[in-house]
Image (cartoon, rainbow, N blue to C red; front, side):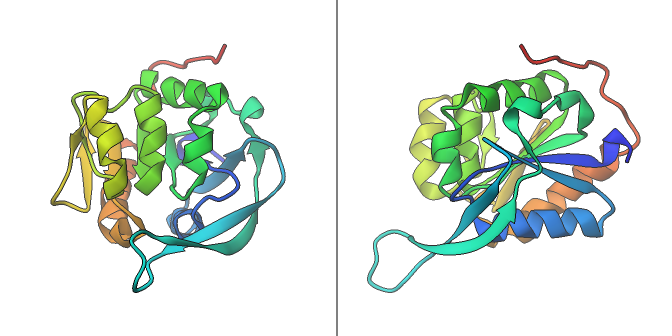
Length: 199
């Protein structure tokens, strides 16, 4: 398949089931090839975050199982059209993985689109990509975004700022993927001018 049809999805154990599966299915439906990268090639345990009456924060239940396609060590950003970072609890530990930060920065430096939703924005924060940008994310990631110079979006469910598109939660997926697919359509026929090789 042509590189401009391959979309890299970064996640790991405790990734949000609905966000990962919805992304994979929507991309396949539209003729793109989702490729899931994780710390290792393995079967991952996804989770479901939801809200229950009487709880002050979300609860976490065991979700679906999904196989990763490749490890972060085997990712070459030049092979992909864009990058998608779902949420869940996975970004909390993935943001400390230097391989992940290298991948994200390589996509950014190659002028490729980066899409992140919910807690996935935590990886953008750690990679230094929110400074001066309008960012939508889960409300309790607001402090991290603003502490690193980002502008928290309080109204819209999803926003685009340059080649970075962000969304608040899985409930924002209709608005988020409208922006995602608008970007994919605009860039579908173009190849990146610069290819960045990871160290």
